[in-house]
Image 1: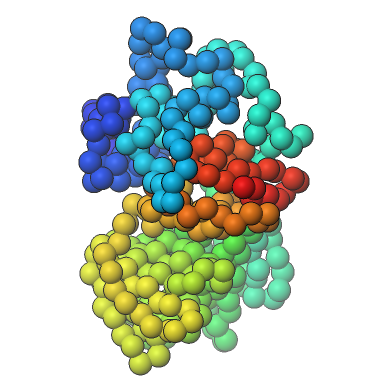
Image 2: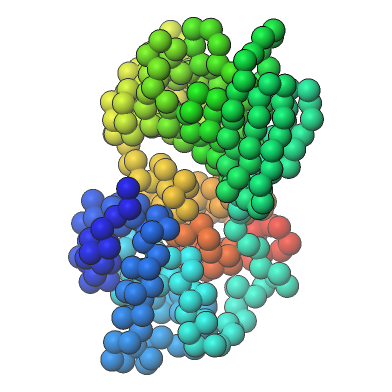
Amino acid sequence: MPKDPARIKYLLERYAAKSCTREELDELFAAVGDPSAEETLHAFMEAQYQRPGTEETLPEVDYEQVYRNILQHTPARRKKIFTFGRVAAAAVFIVLAGSAIIWQTQQRNTAPSPGLAQQSKEDIQPGGTKATLTLADGTTVTLDSSGHQVISAGNTIITRQQGQLLYDAGKTSGAVQYNTLSTPRGGQFRVVLPDGSKVWLNSASSLRYPLAFTGRERMVELDGQGYFEVAPNAEQPFKVRVQSMEVQVLGTHFDVMAYKDESTVNTTLLEGAVQVTEGAATKVLKPGQQAVLDTRSREMLVQPANVNKVIAWKNGLFVFNNMTLPAILREVARWYDVEIVYQATPSAEQYGGGLSRGLHLSNVLALLEAGGSNHFRIEGRKIIVLP
C-alpha cells in the first residue's frame, strides 16, 4: 500500500535534519522503493535546491567531489560506520533516489567531470528485468520487460506482460511437467504460479515449479534468492526446497536467500507462519524472525530480522546494516554482473545506509569509497579493490 505523501515528506525532513530514529530510517527506505513516492521525492528535492545558498554548497555536478563533500570523509580508524548521522542534508539527492543525480544533471544542463564515474569508456549500468524460461521439453525462451508474449506449454498458457509471467493452467493429465525460471547476474523477474502465488526472483537465481499443482502439496525448488507471497490453501501446503533445507507454509509472505557464495541460508518471515526443516532440526518462525542456517556446520538458529533490509532488493534498493565491504560487494557483483578482484585486503569498516539499485556502478563505488578506506577501479566488467 503506497505511503501517505505527508508521511514521506515528514520522514525526508527528519532525515535531512539528521534526526531520524532507526525505525524511521527503515520506514523511509522501504517507502522510497515504491514508485508512488517519486513525485514526493522530486518535490522535496526541488524545494531543497531552491533554498537560499544551495547554489553555493552544490558544485557543478562533479560527481566525485559532490560525494566527498556530502559524506564528509573522516580519518580512517579500525572500525567505521557509514551511517545516516554522517550524511549532510543534500545527501538525500544521491542516497535516496537513483534518479536524483540524473534529475540534478538535467536541471543544471551540466555534464559530469572526469572521476571514478569516468574511469571506463562505458560505465556499467544497473541490472534490469530479464530472465530465461526453460520449458518441460527443454525449449528456452528469453524474457524481458518489453512487449507482450504468449507461450503455449501443453494445456497451459503462459503470458509474459509487464515484466512478469502469468500461468493459466488447463486440465492436466499424465506426468507432472516442470518449468524453470532463471535470472542471470544483473537480472530480476516475477512469476505468478498456477495457484496464484507470486514469486520475485533476485539476480542469479532460479525457481523450478510444476505447470499445475496436483497431489497433497505444492512444491517448488529455489536456488539463489526469492520473495514469496503464497496463495492460501490449507488443504495443499506450499513448500520451498532449498538445497537440503525445506520451508513449509500455509499462506504467507517470506524471503529465502540461498546463494552458494554466501555462508548462510536465510529464511525471513514477514507475515503468517513458516516451518523450516534441516535434517532433524525444525524451527517455526513468527513474523519478523529469521532462520539462519550455517552451510558448513549445518546448525540453524532463529533471530530477529531487519525485514526492510532483507527485502530491499525487491523494492529497488541496497540497504546495508553493519555490513563488511566483501558482503556488500557480493551483492553489487550479482546485480551489476561484475567480478570482484582484490589487490588489497578489504578494510575492516562496517557500513550502514542505503542506495538505489538504479545507480550506475561508478556512483555506488564512489559512495563506498567516500565512506571507507578502500578505493576502487573499474576495468571492463571487473571491480579492482585497491588500498
